[in-house]
Length: 569
Image (cartoon, rainbow, N blue to C red):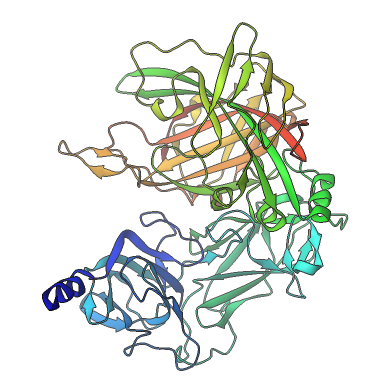
């Protein structure tokens, strides 16, 4: 028995997950431009056996370094120099620590020691500044942890009982909370005195693509940073994006709600209405049905030849949100407000943003399958094990877009009117609704966009198929994956990437993608089996609302995008 116990103890060596050293606010994946850990910042280590089974948080000063917390210590080694990090939280699966302001900069290694056993080293890059903004979904995306002068949280709708301030107005001063502005000259094991870092750190804040005035940017707690900014004139919407740039490195993007008229609920042409959000606040919950039809047409060029692939897909989810879940999520379309851009990260070949909130909502049964009725045939959207609906309607499946079969199935989502219906189930009743897909948008300067310089603005021009509609510009870039035996990079399910989406009125005829959006994308490698960087432009719809018992609102949307592989440099 003693031998078995000793063997069990030895086997419990701490293990740091591959790529598991992350900014504790942004959770930006290693290998992306903003994934380095700043001096003085709060960072997370993910893994197994890192600490005790019962999570422990530091509760008094001085904060622990060499002595550790509940048996856990963290060390950084860069270029032969080793320092102890300040452990603030420890558990079996995650350790949160503060990178000391005197930590050496450069590429190094992190180790975690728990109860006398030390992990294998994990790679880390330490820099002077790399800011991450906290988000309400605890995943680094969607609505940010942004407060007003009374420390109420900026939100889509006001509910002061939950300390939700509702939308802000142009000219208001808000506070963005995050970590990573840079080092300070204080004893970080003791309570930190607030210090403004603007004299040494060139902080730029962008709100809805416009540069904002920054009255204060500094350290206000151990590892905790506060940036005060003034909302510029002209921006509005439920998902106005906020980003911070320091020395060319751009933070994760989070969003705020802005209403120029001071309404208690925001409204977006491509998302929620004020009436929807007011009803949700009154009820404390909101049932939603969201169905989307999507066409992606991508031309892949290289080696003197090209191949054009079409993917027609549909998806649907019916769910019941609590009010916090609704307000902390990225919205029904997971898109920015009109006139703005959003940036999200992804892993693997599918660039769809992952919203952690969606895994927490109550899924509603709307029947065994949904039906998409086109001009000449009907296609199903089957219900998956988790209760969501999805299906390939024509062309190749999105996941197989770069692995086409010899003969592509016939496309389905051509221009015309489509009906989506469902038989109803135990959670949501029967419904039927229609939407009209437009013809192809004419992307007029597509031929001149091949190499994109990330530090410069990018202009995209078009002739709209529907002047009253909306246009989406979508960019995608991946780190490419690992080298195979032939020396080419092959993406895996964990390969990180970044996608951006900008929404503009179709009638504008052009949109300028700001440099701070492009700088968030990684430079795409050239040694990949297939291209991993794309730019797409096309038409999207405003939501068509439908009704069904069991939900408060249903939304049907379409996206028809045309794109090509490009190089982000």
